[in-house]
Amino acid sequence: MYNFKKLFTYMVVGALVMALSISCKSNEEPQETGSTSPYHPSQGSYTDTSWKTGATVTINDNGTCTIAGTAVFGNTGQTQTQTFSITVTKWWYEYDDPDAYHAGSSYEKSKAAINFPTEDYFHVYNRRGSDENLFISFGPEGKRYNTYYLKK
Image (cartoon, rainbow, N blue to C red; front, side, top):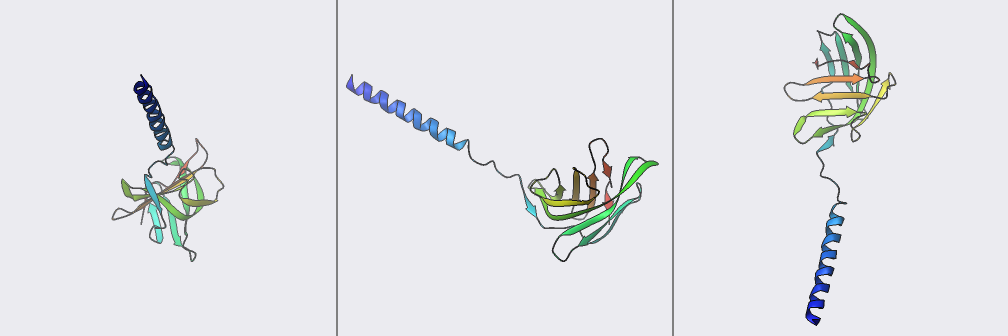
């Protein structure tokens, strides 16, 4: 009987240790799905002739990148235009698509600011490589201005 109590005590203590080790593992940080990069698009002019939008990329002396241009809201032929200026310091990219760089309010690990107009939402998409292009979107929900895909 004594051995049974001893065995039972060891089993209870072992179960508690296992439960504690499992609960500690649940506090681990999740694996990162991407990383940040200071890579900027090539300096120069980018345009979309269909939508008549465009932007100029300037690499600043402090290592940031300013993208300024014109975006549209609406359908083809019935558009409202809006000028913009965005400064990007750091881009976010995901490991499964390392040529797609993002910056803006939805990408908290990127570092970017919209200089004007003052909006709560903005997103800059930078596809690098042989098919390099930019896509900028900003504005309140329901009235997003877009540049569509700008090519150099």
